[in-house]
Length: 129
Image (tube, rainbow, N blue to C red; front, side, top):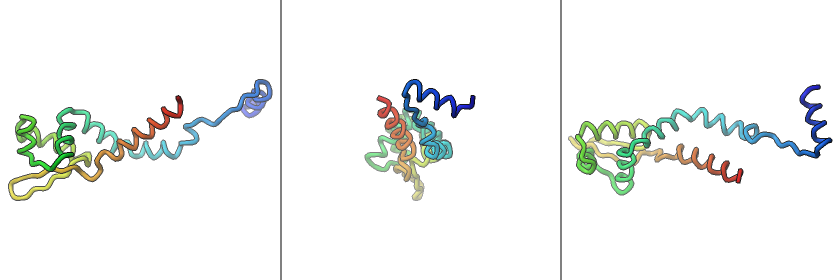
């Protein structure tokens, strides 16, 4: 007996309505998510550290130099620069050097990919309730 006959028999006997799996319906969405997982991994890795989350919070209010951030977090310039480089690599922070001062501001992506990923799963979980 092939699977088509089995499903037909099951429907007749129990009046069960079989629906396609949600994953089958969202196959294209899932494929897009797999393709963008590198940027998601980078974004989530960048915000996994409390210092980097604090930097993003500071830059949400105003732009700041590396020196200002180092003073706020009581870190060395080298230490804070490493954190900023991780955020910059994820596209969450952009820096600009004018003279001897490197100024940081929120980057162009601003966690858009990560927020979209979270929104997708939040909607899926809400649909299950």
